[in-house]
Amino acid sequence: MSVLADAGLVAAKDLRIEARSRVTLAQVLPFGIIVLLLFAFALDPDRGRLAAVAPGLFWVAVMLAALLAIGRSFAIEQLHGARDGLRLSGIDGAAVFLGKAAAIAAQLAVLEVLLGLGVAALYGVDVTSVVVLVAAGMAATAGLAATGTLFGVLAAGLRLRETLLPLLLLPVITPVMLGATRAFESGLGGDPAEGWPWIALLGAFAGLYLAVGVLAFGSLWEDA
Amino acid sequence: MMPLVHLRSVVSLIGGFPALAGVDFDARAGEVVLITGPNGAGKTTLLRVIAGLAPVLRGEVMVEGRDVVADRTAARRSLALVAHDTFCYDDLTARENLRFAARASGRDRAAADAALERCGLTRQARVTHGGLSAGQRRRLALGVALVREPTLWLLDEPHAGLDAHGRALLDDIVTGAAGSGGTVVLASHELGLARPLATREVTLAGGRVTSSTDAPGPTDPRPSTTPGDGRDAGGTGSAGGPAKPSERERAR
Picture (tube, rainbow over the protein chains, first blue to last red):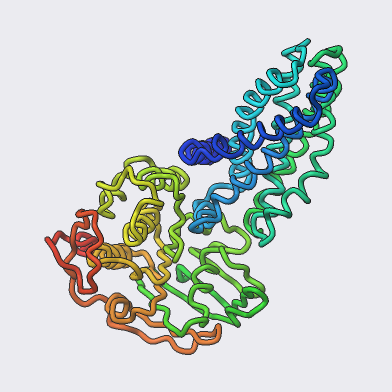
């Protein structure tokens, strides 16, 4: 099979497991909503300030939820030696990387839609450009999923993986957090034209880490 | 002719400890090689080295003429490993696990469904791996290996947890694989069950091969069963139940 077909197989498998176990829905989503609620309580009653910081709070909630989703993606491979089975199957490491990143991205996309609705309801934001929000969301999600998958496999083989993953990942995704927040600011009450350079940055970041992942994940997957 | 499995001076460190300390090992087509030895002798590591899952510090590991260290993906295409772990996903059903393994190995759904039936798990097709009993999981692990249609079988303590039907299935697989020109490398402590299958017995101790002796191999076609009742009988006796031609018999 081609790399893309194999990637689709891995992604479908991960999403099927998620659909059945509902970890993202039952644990990660409530976690993200609680983060949004806590910030809302902390900053209330200043509704104006809430709207101003909504983009940053949204992406902080997404980032924290992403850490859980990435950890979960590799935890399912640890149980019953499933990772060894996947390595023995002959599926190329690049296909595993793309499949896992696609599955994480799909879960994050669902989370972002639901958390976005939560932000709109709780923070009273004013949407000025849906296109900018969607484009920024897609580019940032791709970047988060790519870096998360790459660093997730690094941490997967280690005993302290739960604490190590955030330490490894958070500094690297700082450009994503910055770019996504700025792009969302332009799409939520700001000038939409100011969002596109940030979206370009997010796209470049995602492209870079997708390329690095395709090239490097196989070795990490085998040796981690 | 190059042996199907060829190891020379292989050193493998696990946790800094030399699990294999200069192993020379060959297995040819049609052989069933039984690996014996005390705990910690290096049996599991040997199988994992052949499968490309354990690190090789020094030495040469070839499977069907392919270098396992340099070209793991190609070398793995012809082999299947049945180990302590089942290599399955808890939240996928028996059928889904087999179909995933089949598609990942380039096989179709029919191969997965055939393996499901052969393992006697048709009635448990919709049960998740997490919901299967230990014995059913072991059968599913055999099914995952079956769908790969390997020429090299690596079996690590394969009799553990299997009931009489499971053991009959395992014996059928081993004799069938060897009879059709494949190779089986089998590590086991259950010598009473494993020895009758072996054509050669290799003993490991301290990460080295200490002896290699020929064995008579399977003498009589053993009665085979259709393991289809879906329950673990839990017995320890030999295979019973209605007989059907084994793979070995069919290969003749």
